[in-house]
Image (cartoon, rainbow, N blue to C red; front, side):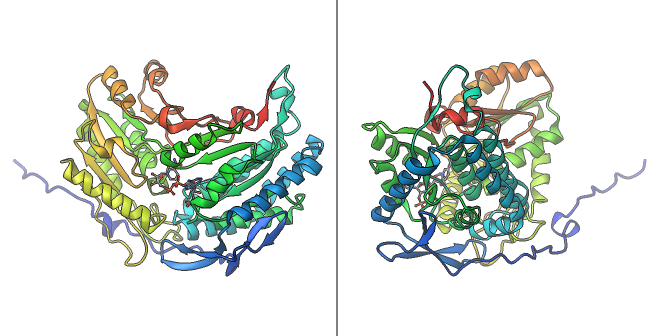
Length: 490
Ligand code: NDP
């Protein structure tokens, strides 16, 4: 009898290492940015500025203006004047030319935008280069096309613009969220006042420079930087007609309360805790890629992240073995290195929040698996982590962590998978992996979530609507549905 062969194990930390591939572009980042109001960069009334840092190095990148309620008022006045005198009256075909111009110049400057996005927010250059910036340009192209066809989007109706839109966006996709909000608003004939998140203001300010270079009439787009109070001043300004907010469910609820007694239209795109469901007839290797993309894309800072994994019991061991092996190949580190899969956590505050949940998950009794790779000594980093053997009541299953942390559960039947997947206060997205089309239809039609992917995950397109049920928000953005959020359709 030949003796049993010793098991061959790959050492992922040595056999799979790549030479460094740092991004070489050095974009221009000014030492200080003012507010973009009425087509000009304007110092804030109270003269206050705050630092924006690179979360991968903890070094200051620039300082940006802190807009007070007075600054917001100036921005709203500029937007109102531009709406009344220029943008609201401009023939739609002319409006669309400006929006096309923004899209084209954004493509020309794509490399710079990608590098600044990565430096300011921590996401890997691979993602900002291949996802954030191209998708942002695609949103401007797509909505530029709609500007002069609004009556065809709503046959038999006479759609009219709303006026001034106030827009407050988060830090996870700073440029993409700005494009997602500004493009449909402008296409529908509105003017805007937009506030980027405190930790990631730079690409919105670079977009302001681009808009200036595109000769957009002054006041059509105004960008005011600041923290929560600036956002609140926008929400509560009496001369704003519509609020578009993306961010946490807590702030979304506060905004909804503030708007309840007004006639402002609003859309709220809030948190999520999506179920990614793997049936035993799924293509397992593809599903493992989908799980990784679902939760580790953008460090897990994704409202539609597949943060709850459900695996059918009969394939559980295989899926988890392959998932662990795949996770060991993920490169965590310098976001500006083109090999990096998982960049820096966006801020110290967010890293503290994730670490808090890692502690909670361990205390709740789930088996913890983490890749335990070496992390850079400076900056905010987190290894990808699984909590195995979770139950429905665990906090890591119920609450949005917004980090590279996946809570894993099993199921036996289709009914059990649906029941467990729907057992959440959220309803933004989900994923289903199976070989059977009929099962896809059965499951997706009963999952209470706005966006559901089948045999893929985290695929975005400007033509497709996006939005949630329950605590995940109100209204739809993107696609044709995204137009009605910026129009009166009577
Ligand atoms: P927030 O909801 O606080 O931030 C979103 C945006 O709203 C930011 O521009 C923020 O300003 C602004 N804002 C904050 N308070 C108010 C207010 N009272 N009125 C109007 N605007 C306001 O998210 P955080 O950045 O604090 O993140 C907290 C948690 O929220 C995360 O850990 C994550 O779980 C979740 N989150 C979910 C997102 C999603 O897309 N679903 C996106 C971001 C976060 P600023 O940040 O500049 O102070």
